[in-house]
Length: 368
Image (tube, rainbow, N blue to C red):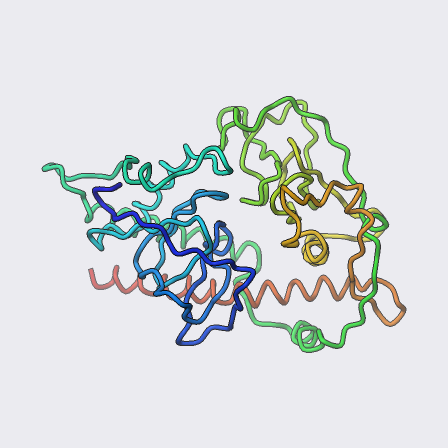
């Protein structure tokens, strides 16, 4: 990679000591060692050093060892490298995908991580022309075709899921407006949820495929916070198959709970919980609402590998706040409608983006 990039170290700042602000013209992305939100932890004003340049690539050294394109000027937390391209054309999705393929050999943590020298000497594979030069034209066409394919899949998904209509209904608008007036009540987690018993598996994560291969088609849960903890696959045979539950890590650096809407099973250092009262209709929107409430007491910066949160025996005794109706009972209808409204607000930009891309594609076809 040293042939293509100047590899330098980003000046590291402690995110906990910074004040993140709302977006305006004079702000910079602050990048952390995470895949979430493409690494952007928040926005900051100019700090006491110059920001890293735009159109570069960030590579986290520990944690989630991952390369990401930075289109804006940016600052970062500690242990992040900057790949400054010697040719601006090298900044594209195919190149960063190739870099991430190479970075898979680094496991992160304290024993397997990239260094300045190792990054410079790491090899990536790129398409070339007949005379051995990087084939930028091929990469541009290939990426464009992939984008068109993904846009088509996105449009189909939005229609099937009913999310292509992002207009809020009257009751959804009212719920958003009334949010500050909602009554809340404390509930002990263990009185609402119960742990799901699962069959113990003998597999080791390091020996499992990271993509579906042959019989290995069932996602398996570990303590990782990446990809909702589902980063490996096992055979379905002799497993406890779970769905529509909440997963929580029991031994992790990040204790973030997730709603799992698809089939999976549990491997290690994590567990699943489900709503206790089977007579109450508790579906995806209710789970999405409550998982955010659970994370208010589990996904905290004070918890880490050094200061563990603990397992279900600890979490079940914690309290969360849930909305209540005029009778003082949990307001399930409010939770359901609120999440549906939030989905529409979030998906609006996605729908508009898809519509815009479709129009551009149509114009290109008509003019060709």
